Length: 455
Ligand code: GLA
Image 1 (cartoon, rainbow, N blue to C red):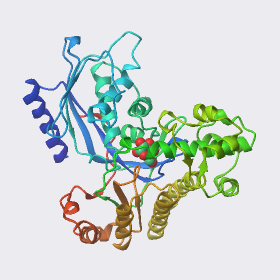
Image 2: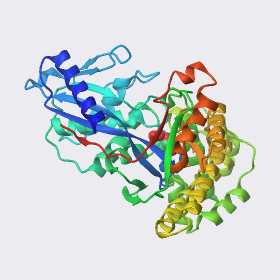
Image 3: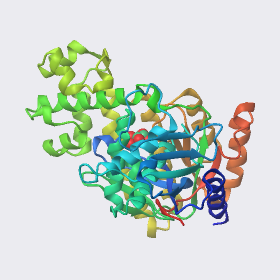
Image 4: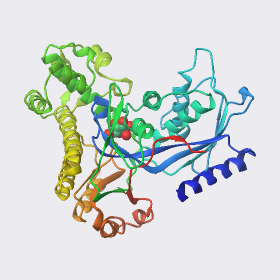
């Protein structure tokens, strides 16, 4: 509570210093940690994140003069430069490496698209203060998009329900170029303090997941940064999964051109995850597929490969890992299901320790699948996960997109302090640049509230 008051007064006073007036309102949107269910939201499958207390806060005024456009500033002005723009058009097409203000523009554009044709967003002065570490897998970018959308909604007197706004933001973030799913935006809007959520898609909905009382979740940053929008790893995985799904659909005489997500395929095949995993192992060779292999498997030409299977950013891919990627998607989906069921059984049971142990094993298996099948880990992140495991966690895994960033561990509450100390010694103290990132890089987290107006 004290901390959020400090943030509020910090952003408000930075606003006053910059613009010489008080903000009309202040909004916030949190980052998240995903407990389990990695890289399956864009296949339409449920995921299980919780919001963290680290967030993006925006203090805003809406000038009367509509011609004022957008003036965007950040409390950390040395790192995040001021940005000024007209609101008549949003320019995204020059991005080799997206900058911070592009994420704000995504949120604004998402809301702009809800206005009647010809109507334009009102101008805004915005001061931003963020506490979500960037490029750490804790969804700092989506928090920025969601906070900006919320600010634009308030500034324009709109009343968009949280789930609708989350979907708008998920779609709008694609302007950055990364073809993410909707997890980050959904949890940022739908989170509630004290609750982890099962987020389901098509249509978007959320339900509470009661976590065991005698554990805490610890987040640790590997200190390897990866800006997922600056590489093609993410979109490559999306394309590989889509192609695997389309080949399976083709083999089963389904209209494969209309099927883009594993969940759509599963519905049409009427199969549960076990038989699907079996089918995957039977269908795909372990070696990478060439473009010619994919064309032959689908009975299509190169041109059709480009239009039906590949997105703008994956047109030039030459090889595709299909077996490993789609095996991860189905096995991870199964782990989410079992995780949720284990939490439900664990609620009233005496065997709380057993429940936590089972959740730990699922998280550990999830990490192995991300590392070996989805290949979205990093040697330092693997090392961090092993350190967490050895330091007394029931289980640990990478969280978020991966290729660096954070790990999350489930740890007995009673031994949490000893755990933190051991991880500090065995991972952070080993390298001065890691040690310099403490204490922000290692913390116990509990589910925080979703996005909203704070003043
Ligand atoms: C990013 C995306 C999410 C999700 C995760 C991986 O955070 O924005 O939609 O795909 O990666 O689980």
